[in-house]
Amino acid sequence: MLIKRPCRRHDRWSDHTWIEPGVVICTCGGRVELYDPLTNECKTCGTLWNCNGQALKPRREREED
Image 1 (cartoon, rainbow, N blue to C red):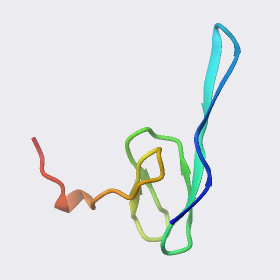
Image 2: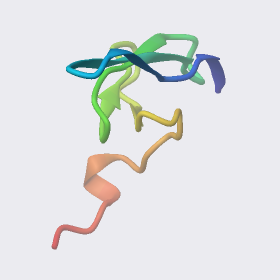
Image 3: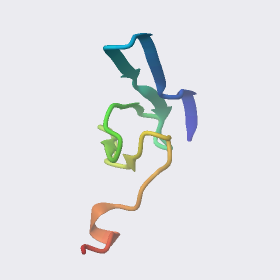
């Protein structure tokens, strides 16, 4: 996994704040934009990533509460 660009927070005005999504190159070579804070899916292989660029367990392997 290669983090091309981390998420960036922009505070230009007190009432206009936004976060620019980061970009990760997946282990399969696919490019993943990190829009969602929890799960961002690689369109090539389906690997899930969080907004910090960490790969997550597949949905079928995670415990449901």
